[in-house]
Length: 123
Image 1 (spheres, rainbow, N blue to C red):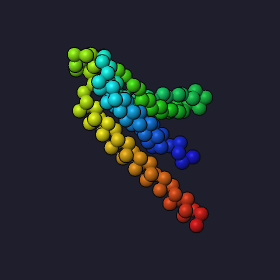
Image 2: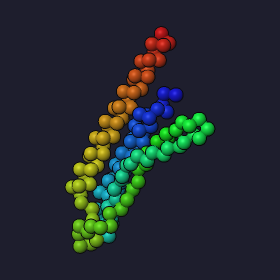
Image 3: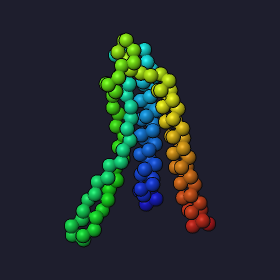
Image 4: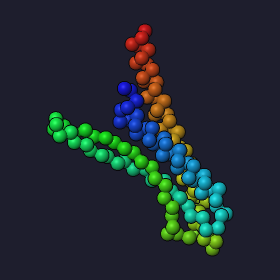
């Protein structure tokens, strides 16, 4: 199937992670004035699990991409206990938006490529 390849999986997981990142930074900005609020960040990492098929001696690789949210408990920016750096959060929000837009462009390019192939096959 077209959409079960590694590239599609990575693009889909990247869009999910970048959307989550935008939500987290928006939430951090919204809580800028909340006393004792701790800023959160999103980490995106590839976890590769290798399954070995003992009967045939071949290995089958399964890729899994995971985004996790963590809280920064190590820094304090203000006297009220909050550690939200507004300029940093706005920059990270913009960066996540730009990255999301680029990945969305790549997904659209893939669909256009599939559409072109299907039109040639059908026409």
